[in-house]
Image 1 (cartoon, helix red, strand yellow):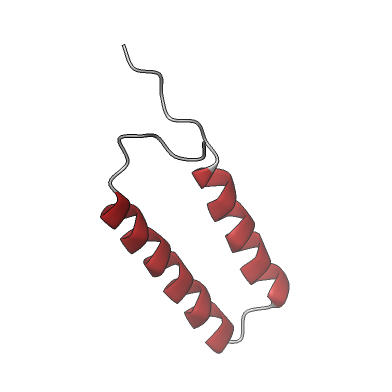
Image 2 (cartoon, rainbow, N blue to C red):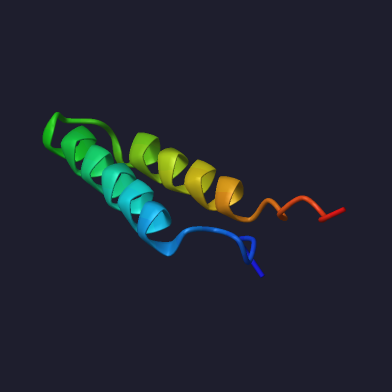
Length: 55
């Protein structure tokens, strides 16, 4: 599982939309493919962090 069970789906969707729009702005602003790819890899790494154990 990539995100915890207690994660609010609407908040997560808003976060991902904001990240994607930011990456779009980088592209339109002339950022290199490597820069955008690096940003995408960092987001995936953040999402892959296990949720803390309850208790």
